[in-house]
Length: 418
Image (tube, rainbow, N blue to C red):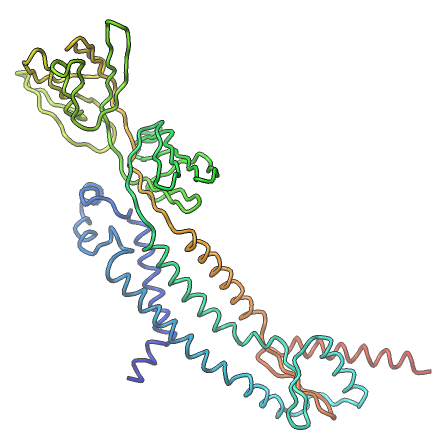
């Protein structure tokens, strides 16, 4: 059992776990996460089976990634507990060991007194051990390693909270429209495009976030794997769709309305005659006999869109295929078919404000811990009636500083001597 605990808290095991976390993070960055299975089939023809089987499409919620995080938390906890137990005894042991050091520099009585005053000016902490005085500088530096491990552990725990506690909502919005969240936050979509200027697929939405308190983000584009963060929200470009677009005109009064349609709907004045909108398709094939076969799916733009509608006139129904620019009259209305409208599907993640604040606090703790570890090494100075000695992990700076102070004192003594 001791061997198992020893390995679980060992640095070797911790480095192994950190390497696995880094590997999973790289995979999660290279493979877009949380798309539908069909998306991976279309984009990873040879690797989609491996990706879906191993859960690489949602790696941060996979059982093995969660297990790695739990083991890493256990490793850091055991390391921290061990260091706390050692720190409780280390100060007394360090002072006792320092008191037993032989003098490295011999001093006169005046030199001893001058050095004592210098150490007090430096705000060193004094402990009396027998006939010796032990002064400690940067005593808190012994906590640097413990604080570093603690900050890593807290980063892991709060990072896990930031990963698994947020609420995730999938919403769609037409360009020019806004999504309003439960807390009043507004996410406005100004524009959406499927391809860039060269024709390469590049699903991009230009959005702006307005928080309930009035704070407003800049208008920024988001792409797959390049989300936008503002306040407690993080918005991802998740998916896309194509909606039918119709303009309905009433010739009697000249009124006109534009409709953007994603579902089956009946457009009519009297509820009897009118047009049943069914769907819009990306393309079609026509054989020499004039028979049409509709293409139901595609990646990218609808290059040759076709509408499927049912025209109702006085109780009779006729299935019709229409193209952008066509017009159909039914029930006293004129239905004009426009080019389809592309719209984004957004994944909206809301992280509790407390979690974000805790992450900032932990990062500040980690910076402070690293500074203490590397730049605040504990130094001990033993002073007795004959001289002094300097100890610690890095005593050179203190030795130079004390030697310089004593040299200044001796120089002043010589100048004051007539």
